[in-house]
Length: 169
Image (cartoon, rainbow, N blue to C red; front, side):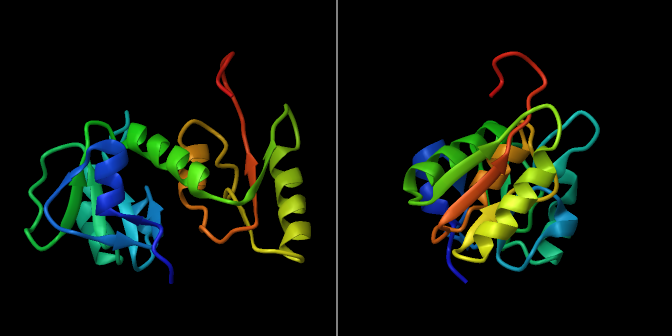
């Protein structure tokens, strides 16, 4: 399992302050989808606050949490604190894009983005290591999250990109 993110990189790209050194093999915003070794990103939204799910994320295998609020975390739980978790995920996406040697393919349009992305991923997966956003993660959260999850040794990254206002893409 390769390391995708660590506390040193987050300090460099987002001025993250943390309580210990950590390394993560992936990232996730849903505590139910955490895989052992992931960084849990606690996004504060309109309906849910990811900070309320930190304990569940740790119990599911997260090695560290990216937070924007003071939390009552046990001192043996690694965390990195930033001003805004979503903005930090965007910085992570840009950083990974700059480090990656992958060929990137973006799919957009009014109809058929997910099916087209899935077909291209299936075809390219036959010839090389390929990554694509899961489901239809094509919005302002899903695209940076998907980019931030791209394994560094990926040959092709297929991203479905949607928009809901002019100038968003």
